[in-house]
Image (cartoon, rainbow over all chains, first blue to last red):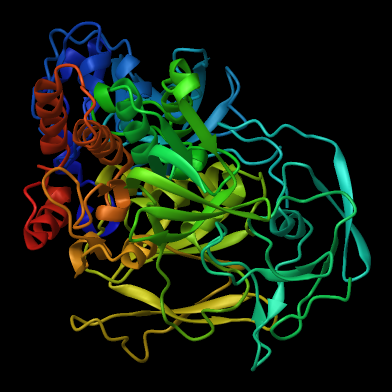
Length: 162
Length: 103
Length: 361
């Protein structure tokens, strides 16, 4: 139960994906904000008005997948780091995640990919690491994984060491 | 026990300064407090409780609880967690309620 | 004795914003803080804040601090900042006794706003006085202000936002968090924080607490155990964990001592964190010309502290006879911000607390 261990069930997280997997041929933001909190940077940072919260900032964000381009601006603006962008291309999936640790993984490097419970489920290849003034110390990392893990992959294992 | 590379913060390394703790020489930075400099050198026990002599370190680190009190430059009951480190400071464990050294 | 127009005690988010409102209305302000740097707890908040754009959501606490301090720069001639100054006494005739750099002096003020914030609570368990048992905020101070690791292996006690956030910040500093234990049945902080640390490998155990810390001169290990539905430890469920640091994150208590000393009415309200001043709708205490805002009135967030500070400063300025431009609309907008910050499921305690105090929140 998420209130006991912080882990959303597969059923809960699946609801945040587009109903039709075909939509994920283009990258889409998957917002995993499961309880009402007063917060709206995802709505205000989206340049395409794809996310709606409204005047009462406690309302859980609603996403319009047609409008969403997967630009990932919301990913590094979310204070809860609760958003990822996902895309399915043939037998691969691309995961765009926020990352606030050092050292940053290197482009073309291999990383361990974990699920919501922190368990390593697969290996991924780092396609891109984005760090600039706009991302403000929250790096945006593009990771390529097998499409099997499109739904259950969540982030990468932290690399420690100097 | 210093943090080398922090993903959000930059720790400016100002000039190293030296001080003594119970007679031994230690080093810290101008941006340290006495307690943070000692902690960085692995010193966690800062004093003892008055009656039962139990080991004490800091607790709140912002000057509210007085767990971190030590004898500094002859002055007792100095809250080391909020006192800036200065070069040449003489820091000692405080025994009991603390009596100032004769000046 | 020095004479001042308005004195604000505490330069955290509430105090900084109260000072700004007073200055905007034309008052002269003396802003006092016992620390070298202004900003209160914002000094060590490296994470992105929640709320709306008006409260600088998505900006890091350390950056919001710069914004709040910069907002005061245009008023340089009417603002006096006394840092490294402890207010050691607050007297009925609105006299403050202060100590700065070992010098004692007194200030007589027309108006005083107390924004002293709160302090961390501790938890009773065997050997809770061992070096290595630290308040979670203390660990945050050590890491984010001084760049020093508290240890190598940590047990976090408490799943409120501070416990969850500091666990994450420990990982960022390269420290292993072995587990997070929470005595209640459910995680009490934001689930997004909990999910974030869970997927980074930190085990969250509810209905679990620390039984004792073990070590000679410092923490070397701990014993944790399960709690039953009556919050009692269950013998036989003990587990030993090898850790060298225990972070206690069990809540904050308002720092109301000065308000008690001056004789303002104070009431114990559990939901607000402890003893809080009895304030009216305009944040004035039972002592005329004495106001209070921020965490000292009830444990909440920096975002609400900023809004409360703004409202209090405006009210205090008007009461002194200054004019605040468009004050009615401005206060209404600020109260709307507070309403949204306090209407979600996580704000139940605050709403209950203020209802008990008899203040419309």
